Length: 314
Image (cartoon, rainbow, N blue to C red):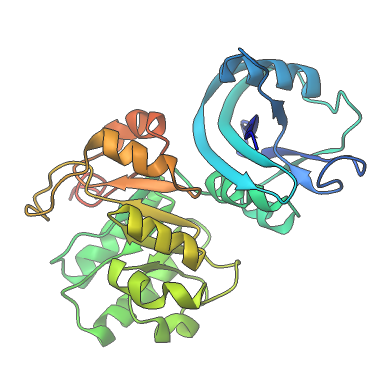
């Protein structure tokens, strides 16, 4: 069965809201919401298909776009490759040129709409930022909390509280304070035993590779409303993350790092190859910084994750 190549757009307005459209009841997956787009014609480039589909469906002209995520999905009756682009600039006023209802919704509200199963990773990618801050080791608690506060004030919207040198009760105390600093501004991801899950309802959970190996066969440990992420380094670990039903992963190390000098870097080409076989958002980690976002997007990643490169000075 030939995979149908479909281009789709996460169209972001100036206020950050995202445009979605409702499928006609007569269509495949009718009545569900979707990201506008359509089939890439034989011999047509993806960029040309994106421009054509949005012109035909919404009456707009694309002026700024970039790759966001590629998602392969097998329905019982067809196989599709969703080639998703973020559209951050366009001219014209979007309207349902084919009579389809439209809605502008905040990234947070996307989770409340019913999308086809194949769209779930796109919903995650549309809601996630392109930078993921991981807290450095060896900081005193006040220093760590000040840094988180400063980073969030500076626009960081996804924070992992990583403190492997902290004993458990101290980490839990810091987690409570960090959750307060992030509330309403950034998504906090915690690390630790899954027994703690019930104690931090607003936080997402970032699993270690060891936890992935231990728990993947049991499936997702909590409902879709909470973010679940995992640290991956190999194709095998990515497969386990898929099995567990994660929302996103970090893939590392892309390049050599001071923190893990013995780890063999994947390199950009191998990282891109691993991302191509995975259907959820991926943050590239290890020897990368904010200046590598563009390269990460071209490799198929959601963005970049980092420790020192993202930690605010002073």
